[in-house]
Amino acid sequence: MHDSNPGSPPIPDTASDSPEADLAEGAPAEAAAGNSFTELRDDLTALVEDARTYAEAEIAFQKTRAGLAGKAAGRALGLLVLALVLLHIALIALAVGAVIALAPLVSIWGAIAIVVGVMLVGVGALVYLAVGDGKMLSAMFASDGTK
Image (cartoon, rainbow, N blue to C red; front, side):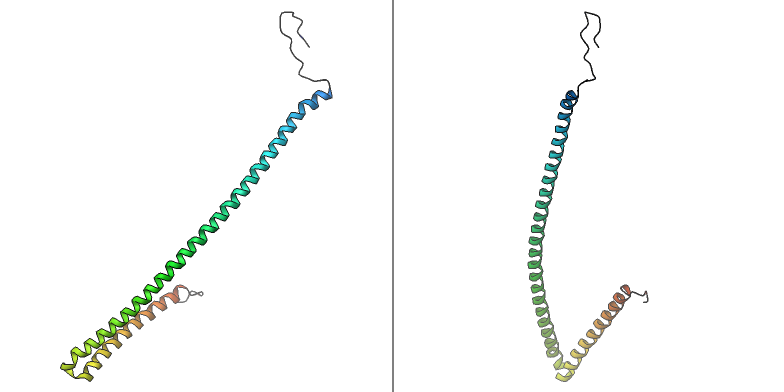
């Protein structure tokens, strides 16, 4: 299908008449599709490897963090126990000092009774407050909605 005008350039036929031409034109498209699938597979393989690497790094990080948290919690618990022991010793010293200070005023037995009585009142007040908090917690977590 060429133009009959001798001065114009020839127009190539767009329709190929031979099956060999179709195969030759289709081969690069199939190769490109094969390359696309190969690239996709390679990308997916790289993505899986990256995800595995990330998961391993995250697990290692969490193990390290848990180890550090455990050590810090152990140290904090030890320091808290030491603080409670020192507080107990200080309260004993306060009680003995109060008995010694009150003894000349009300006799030794009177001083002991006063100090022990004040301590028992303090214990009673603390227990009363703890029971109130316990009831509040019980009401907060009651499953049947009763208070």
